[in-house]
Image 1: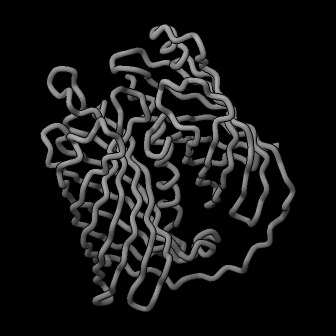
Image 2 (image 1 turned 45 degrees about the vertical axis):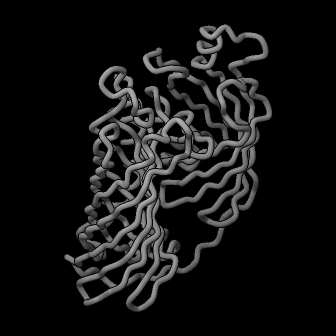
Image 3 (image 1 turned 90 degrees about the horizontal axis):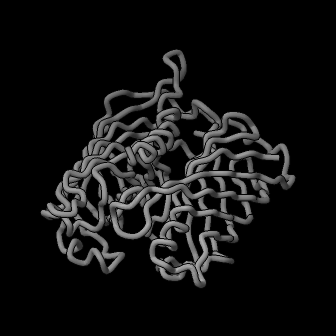
Length: 367
């Protein structure tokens, strides 16, 4: 049941993409759609010395994608250069007895960086859910310190070059990164970062309507506004097998709209970490240690219809838990779903340059 919260977060994140994927109605402009096969091979990045023995294999696998190429059905599609919306099924053979195989389902969005008559370069990104056949086990698989559970979140980032061979067939080259982590729900959880490259081939199965142009919308207001985001996360600290405890977080930000879809924010981030409090007590480290933190954050919100992509860089102003090997700087990546102009559901992943600390979900309020 400890993975229940991770599944809920991942499903909520996927609703972002699935809602975008399902927006067009039968009586509206039809999308061009295609199926795509991607074959790849690569290596595991050794982002931590603990997984050095796992980073020696050369994983390989494939992705099978269903892709919709947007045509301006809604304003945001035109504003972002008519991106692709896709859903990907991925099979990964880690070619390692400790890691086994991974299966994942990842909805994603693809932004075109360059687009010519027959060729294009695009950036794909998405998040989903992965299943691993050989997670950590204290007796049967105690060398797998990267994956502490059979289920985990999956993050996907790809740069792809595509060339149209015929009106219905495209081929291409790509390099991508896959990241698997359960966000410290279950220890051990060093996570896996895979960098891989390969070839792709895509076949068009439906021809859509011509692209619709929208007039540029003017920003209604550039006024500063405050936002409050209370959130909660659950995690283990220390060796695997301990209890999962909550961490309560509060973010207060001052926001500055730049355009209709782009907002900068600065703020303070505080936390009251009961998992850290338990760890300090069990390790008898009360002297000089504290389970409360305070940080300064600088971030950006990118709106896509009712949804928003969040990126933040943070610096700890107060965090005395030096024995946990966390760095002063951290990053936060998240998704928001606006249920009204001033209220949004929020899900964030907090990491330290690839080392996940926690998955946070909460409710954002704008003043």
